[in-house]
Length: 326
Image (cartoon, rainbow, N blue to C red; front, top):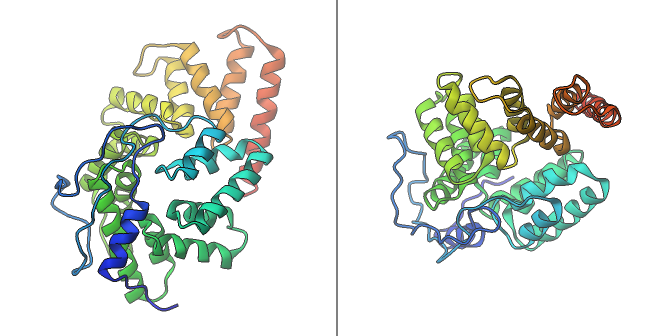
């Protein structure tokens, strides 16, 4: 495939088309395009002749992410940042929602929504050719994460380098404009750089912190991993926030902390709510939360409920089998 090289005009149009950062339901205007980044000195690589990006006049700003499949589907159609990804995550709970998620992502990708094309790439994993086509379209439309993914797949080093520069440039611009998901993606790139590059933990932590502060649960969870036990009380608080923002791994983990009182005031009811959220998500590692909640309903820490505990154990077994079979 020929190397992609966007003209200045095309790149600006792509950025305008997909630069809708912020969580669903947000009303706060985005920062101006001239706002400088205060990231560590090791700045993201950028194409040498790339033009300055223009930010939308206003956007949804900060707020809670969509809470259920229907809300996420509607937010995806409205092109709110992160909504199509969350829609696809929510769809894992029901087959009917999964089919609707695929239909919506396909329609929105055809309409030129880059995040929806990236979601289609995920949904089409069993069809390598179509999945790669969707990933390429997402990058062409200006989705930085897709460009980085393509760079990692390319056997042509020159093309891989170009894709990586483009991806980092796009992510850096959107992070400067307070897109939480772009900030978290930059943190991922700094933590796990390409071949021949050294990780930059300080830069990764800075971007995870910004992504978390702007409302991305993945950023909060990644920041906990980056802290690695150095600030345990803060890490529990970050896990709590990540869980509130819909990060199921954080819900499973913070539930354990509240159940035992590890670096937080013990609260079995709060633990139960977190475990339930993780179990309901159907995400990887969620089966542990299903089992933990079932144990609490069986051993008297919560009002005993044998039927509910049995149902939770069954769901845990089903989820464990699903992910062990992947």
